[in-house]
Image (cartoon, rainbow, N blue to C red; front, side, top):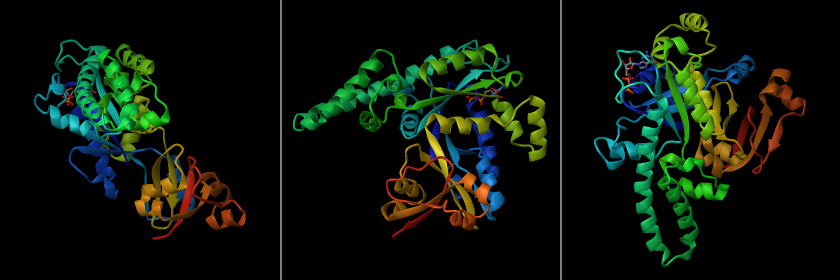
Length: 362
Ligand code: GDP
């Protein structure tokens, strides 16, 4: 599943956010894949289609798609030079699919800010600088090694050119995610494991009085995010932690009194999904109805591979219908009778809201 890693300066609310996530996880304890490590929280991606499917197909469990959030302690100024927890942090952060950058936008006077006053843009730059320095360090080493190898292997030259392009950007103080690449190049760049090549979702950690994030501090973060193609979600971490301790009906009441449609953590999961170009398809049967996460453009065997790698290798065909078909015809048998159960082969590109049964060799 999708994994995002939390970064941010000290005292901006990372632990508070993470605790809220972990409380959300307790509720999701039925999901086998959520019990991993103490530093991993999971947020279900809100999805009405699961409820729709469950209306027509009797099932034991409903399993939503999840965004996993990894709390990676220890990014402080100087992390890129390997001070303190720096190295461990860097090796963890290279693994994640996207960066969740928590930025302090709450003004509460009794919480001391490491750099004095509250200034979200300064904070973003501080963290970004550390991440770029870390990338510079690893890229310089990589480039040197690859140049040596290239003496006997000219096929490495395009890779070197890409490394040089990234290096140039970093030296100019620009993150790699701002560069443009074609699909093939992007795949190669991904193998470099650069942190600033990853997409960023900012969490503007706002005061209780600004849950909509329309205040001046959150607005600055939103403008910054827009200028670089990143996402942003206003979250009052403190409030989210409190929300997660409430019973569902109390939670609903509190959300309404705050003028919120859903917990900000749900918005966050959905936004991470959108930012990464992900969508869901479903499997539905008496044991479980489940959402599976796939990238847009994923073929049928690749979609099957998300369930199990053997399914991809042994893929024969898929029977596919749309959630809306079920709403219209009410049973799978009726969908089949109406000729709407499609048989799709290896080249079929899965669409959002497809429901599938796979046939495969083992
Ligand atoms: P970390 O160092 O980034 O993990 O920050 P913490 O989560 O420990 O938060 C630092 C302080 O800020 C704590 O005293 C929190 O209670 C407070 N804090 C965190 N999030 C919020 C928030 O959304 N609103 C307010 N008012 N205070 C917050």
